[in-house]
Image 1: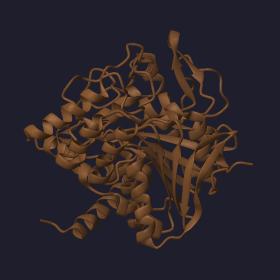
Image 2: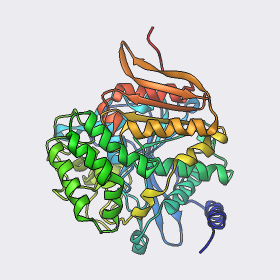
Image 3: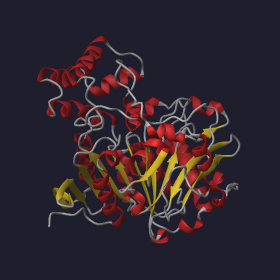
Image 4: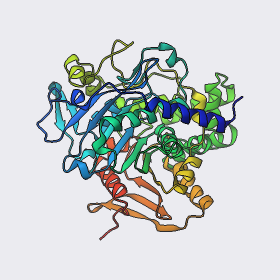
Length: 459
């Protein structure tokens, strides 16, 4: 079996070799004149494909929106949705923080809290098989890993900056949520290790999966503390069979009777009428939550109840929209929020990424971990303890004591900063997809992070 160091060296060689291959697409060809139903805007939009494997014709789809004002001076922010296997265009761009949101009558409306108010935003559908991204060699979908995803994402970036050289010197940040707790740190680590000519300044990950046991087992305390399960069930859920054990057994398809019974008891008490990705939200589950369901996949009860008015899915399945985006469907009959063809290696969920955050901090890359505080899937309890533990391990002193931060006159959440380089923050009232449920507070958080400034305190 190859050693980890040998595998990493091989990966680096492959990445460097692939970046030397010519790219056929041109930014002019990828420029979007106008999306169907969109309001008039002054900023430019681009979308299309970057080939990441010429031999097997594997190509990743992107959607790039320039900043609304002075784009040449603004940072470039890469956004990655999780799953694994869910769309950054359908979720991140259209439902969370892109410039437009779909509404009735097949039109788009302006998003007043779009992230391109403060940055140039690059949405990437990764890995191949997600959204409009594809592999002509279908065997690629058989088993995709974190290592493959990170390598393809780096090749994408190297080639994308060749096509957009005017942004190659801009500050670059990687952001994402959910399983991007793997994607973002692993990509950042590969950028550092390969000494890529990318001006990486920081990463920000929301409700991220960073350490399997800690993140999953914090679910019990979260549910109990919010009154969603009883004292006796909490005891069983922690002492007899915890959530990480249940998840491991389900991955191996060897769920024991006792763990099955406890799992059923937990979800019976929580009920089908609570959205576990936002426990205070009334239930009408849209595709924005599907990425969390892919990550979770614990319940045997029923498939996700997608609202019939899922406007984003309808919009992206329109032929005129796909033509405007320079997108195509390869090997699938319709666009879907999360991939129906991709088989991701579920054992990769257990790869810890918290240590990668430590290596990034040591490389002077700023790191922000944030949590929508109403999410029970990757609760703030686990994320906060992991960041605090990492700070202690790195010997970082607290530079901003744990305190409330504000957006306007309201508390936006709570934050703590270690060594001026590692930060943790909650977003009050936010779900697993924080920019969807608390867009204004999420934009304020992003702006502060990009500027390298503390979140605002009360005046």
